[in-house]
Image (cartoon, rainbow, N blue to C red; front, side, top):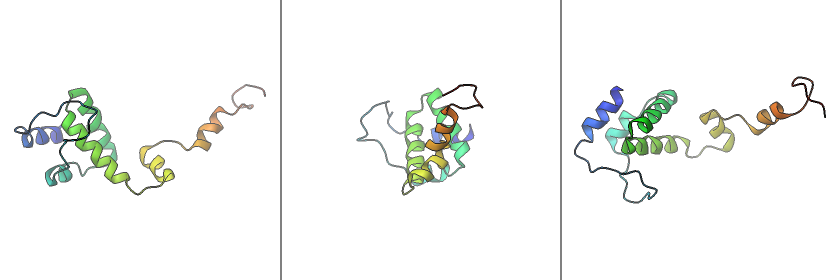
Length: 105
């Protein structure tokens, strides 16, 4: 919550950013924002969830930019690990019929 309050105080005089699909005209990540958003992945995820709930689209946009910059240059396997997404082989094993789930082929 402290991060959200600091961001709001810093951006109080900035023009309102509406929830728009148009990526043009949105502000870039400032040095203040980079330093403020330099937190762990778990905290950044919680922060983005709070932004959705509080409708803080500017902070949500900047937090998303922070996540995308952290993911830049990663291959698919690294991105899956970063985002906590199981690999295709792991999810296929769960759906595979067999004695463990009681279904027959």
